[in-house]
Length: 119
Image (tube, rainbow, N blue to C red; front, side):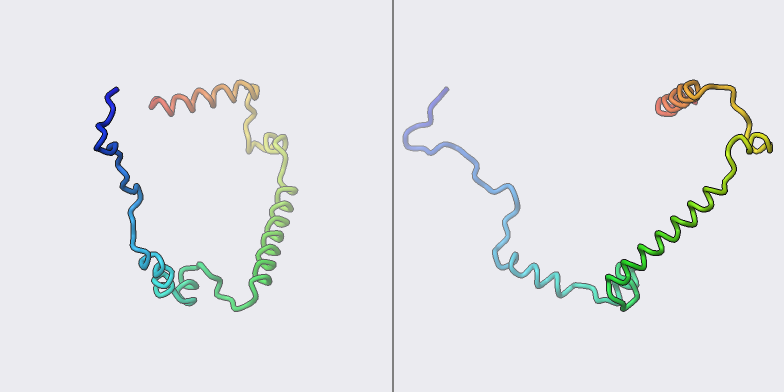
């Protein structure tokens, strides 16, 4: 390999990779963001903040209670749902003579066909 001559420094690009901003621009960025910060009413209009003036802890507890009530209602409805045998007996479902493995293999083949642009 050729060595650099004694009087010339090695050719290394030392320019920064990221754009360089003057320090005052960085220091003022927080102030600029705070100036353009939306007020509470805009955030409520965009559904970012709740419209209520109640404490956040109370709102979180209320959401948790609503979620638990929904879960209880769904579990109650699921518990009253008829089993598959009753649905076959009533004619709502048809009995499929294939085994679970055959159904799985067919589903895999269908998925491959969809991905390849077929069927």
